[in-house]
Image (cartoon, rainbow, N blue to C red; front, side, top):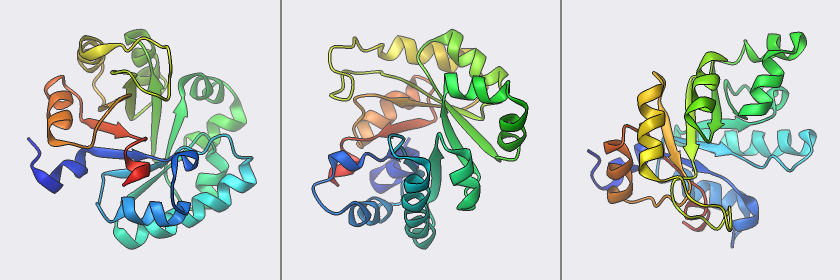
Length: 199
């Protein structure tokens, strides 16, 4: 079980520039100073060129702190920045793996993550070649107002169904208690967005 700062090794910090109270890169530096498992740059509303520029800056900070940087959605931007881990919404991963040109690009990515919301989606993502999953949302979260949380039983079901690491997402807190609770459900760790953007 994690203790103190060791808990951060089980946390993927997910970015959202709209939640920052300070300059974005300053916040990224603060996140990296805690040495989480990774920083997932989830600014997927940006056009690809703007995203690539932002990703390159985040990658530079991550490299200084020895923290893994994960791209989101944009395979070309990841390749351009020398990032070999990309996270995809499941429908995008499915589409890309069935498109000959996109599939060729994706197969050059060392690790692929996918977001899932059911056991069936988890099994599909694994079959498509995902190396890890984020499963949620587990608890109530302001990011999905009005949507019912899926809870710990859902997380246990996903973790049992697949052989790849699963990270709990949705309403997570960067605390020993939260990390340990999710690990006891079979998760490899957790993803934290709102809280990490306020660190």
